[in-house]
Image (cartoon, rainbow, N blue to C red; front, side):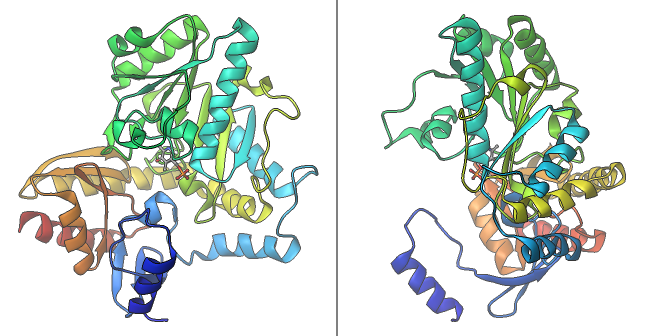
Amino acid sequence: MDKENIIADDGEYIANTYARYKVAFKSGNGALLYDFDGKEYIDCATGIGVNIFGVNDAEWKNAVKNQLDSIQHVCNLYYSQPQTMLAKALCKKTGARKVFFGNSGAEANECAIKAARKYGNTRYGNRNQIITLKNSFHGRTIATITATGQDGFHKYFNPFLEGFKYAEPTMDGIFKHYTDKTCAVMVEVIQGESGVNVLNVDFLRELESFCRKRDILLICDEVQSGNGRTGYLYAYQAAGITPDIVTTAKGLGGGLPIGACLMFGKCGDIFGAGDHGTTFGGNPVVCAGALNIIERLTPDLLLEVQGKGAYFKQNLQHIKNVKGVSGLGLMIGISTTKPARDIAARCLQKGLVVLTAHENVRLLPPLNITKEQINTALKILNEVISE
Ligand SMILES: *Cc1c(COP(=O)(O)O)cnc(C)c1O
């Protein structure tokens, strides 16, 4: 099958939910991707932050293959060694007490929403409202599009769930929507989909103490910002806050589908048997790969990510037509005077894969991208943005 056939059959058989660029990747190596014509690209998208150590990573492939040779799936009625090992590693590294595994970011957030509602309802009776932020993104299921604070996601799918309020990312915004029925506040420490907006650290710290005083759960959605992406294991650590629940997905599986809901402290005991569950979640092959990823996110590697991120930012700032550069580590937003989609398309022509996020260009390169590859990416970005 060549590219033209793929595009034609995709148009005929795949649901029309994606505005795809006319590119089909076939293989890759690290931060390099190859399409069906053999053209090479530098990957600053990683399939939206998923292929965290790039493509064809030997260590991760070994972990996955070894598990495939033992057993590919066990249901959650029985114990699972890879699932247990991954949960233990995540808890030891973060201080979380318990983990629930699903298959995606949306499922991790569904779990957090259920946990928060059970906590509020059982402790306080009928306390089940959740405050999320304007311009947030929490997923595509009915509960998580309801949680998503963007009108664009709320067009056709009513009726939505009750009990969600959207606040400006300030304490005034929170106070406006807070009631004695509020059980949780859910925030992305860095809003990825809406442009790589880093939330103000003072706001996050005030929010933490506001929540703590009232026994409201603070949920950090780190689906995109987690797992080393920002040069911290999780971005909340950079802000110096301690959430009650952390959700993550994307990079955690190194390329295979996984979502995790990490429950800290008092949240460790919210769920009892039968309260939540999944068929595929915590799959042993996926967990074996994820364990390899988590073990490699060492302090040294995280420092390297911080350094690469700083280097990117320094060199992006001075490009003509760049208005601002945001983000942390290798989660980078670039605001320019030009339409982001045009920049992304032009970069593709020149062999660089970048993402957009609202009006901004977004970079989520693999953590092991080399300095040389960063320089090539910068050269192409410079040409495209300043032209
Ligand atoms: C991508 C994303 C999600 C949704 O994850 P899926 O795996 O697509 O369900 C939720 N929250 C944030 C912050 C995300 O970036």
